[in-house]
Length: 449
Ligand SMILES: *Cc1c(COP(=O)(O)O)cnc(C)c1O
Image (cartoon, protein in one colour):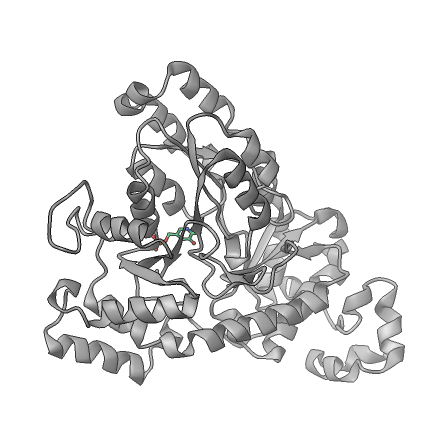
């Protein structure tokens, strides 16, 4: 074919001609704009891309951020209790404003934010909290820390989010709360989850650790449930190495959160209850304050690039972008996630596809290796004296039996493919074209995988 001689880049700019577009349209309707020049890199051909991808969080370590840390170092205010106007208190105010909520409390991690929320709501031994088998283990860890029972419900295969029908099946008289996880930063089906919570009188703690700024039905994620939790761990869109925050509008509940994360000491200085010490320190606050100004713009850039990828993959059956529920306005795009359907790739396993794409210079990954229902903690906790004391033998037996999540297994073992989103989605349109071209090059050569 004539366009075989064009370089990939040249091909992209040349494809506005209808002849080329229609040449591919019968095979790949929305992706007729990409070419297929040459041999797969994995078979010795030229890779689509050799340029490196930006590295996170190093790419945001600019002068402003360094200055902010140096200023804190010199000030001698290193703990939040030394000053009511230090970096942590300042960040809490600024983050609450950005998230569209009244109140915010910084913590040492997203896991700590979640654990503080569970403890502040007084959930503990004997109580059950429903959450997703597909998340960071911090979500489950936060429930276990209070010795409540983390009950898992299966996913929707296409959104990778908690399936509300599965959630409802897991509710019993001991269920106290739901922790929906906005996985990849994409909103889960909050309309259904809030309706289920209302019907059964349950609290909702949103795990929005991947989702800052994302919007759903006119609201920001983290502001829909009773509390919202965020993470500022190194891989997250706003990061200080390790850090987290709780947001909420109920002053009494937020006061209890403050007390819990302050080792049980309230704002007036009285030692009133059980609580670990989960305080964010002033250096973490300084790193966060040093980067917050550009955070919204970076969020918007990620969404623009993701929309571009969506448009390219729209009618491509081999990789389906993460399903969005009605009312989804934006995502945090911690990852750009897709569902790999091998039947469209000549039945090549995902690992073969990923290797071929990696050789083209594009790093896609399977993300989470296993759902939490198949990890060793399940057998561990049901054998623990404290869990055996607080939950009946029949409950623990059924708990183990119900750890079956076929959709989560499918997602983990065969279908999930993610493009790292935090740094990669800040790239140029050309970077996004590289991603699409690599996918399409492998697709067109699928018989050779
Ligand atoms: C990162 C993350 C957590 C835990 O946050 P840490 O700050 O790492 O403790 C919890 N849930 C989800 C969905 C996350 O991505």
